[in-house]
Image (cartoon, rainbow, N blue to C red):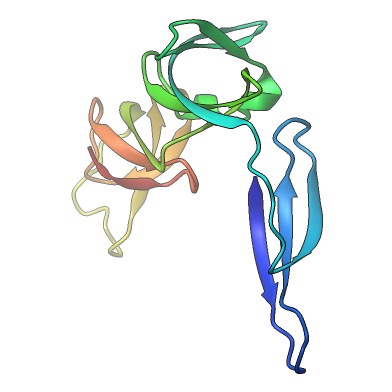
Length: 168
């Protein structure tokens, strides 16, 4: 998985363009830097993306049902990371499979979650235009939301920044 890209274009004639990548190994989760020439070619890995629905988590990991073969796939805590903050039972996500074995998952850019607790926003609390309050969501995470968000509402949350995006 590519984390950062830096392209170095030479100023001299005949110099080669270099691409420096910061990558994460999907199997070992190790992060490393590697430099390539822009003309280098690579063969595609045996990596598949399959839709799967989240079932539950227990001591052995998090369990998903492959939507194509209907088999149960289990991912360990290291493979999941903080993804459980964004997924609820039954939601469909994309699982990465390498050589037929699950190795990780890809979250959508935004998820819709219900607000399970937040203080009511009082009139006159707005000294500036972007006043926020803390809200606890159905997965247990807490994020900052605008004052007009009420208990029981469904909101969109960015999985990349952990921030409020809008009402669902």
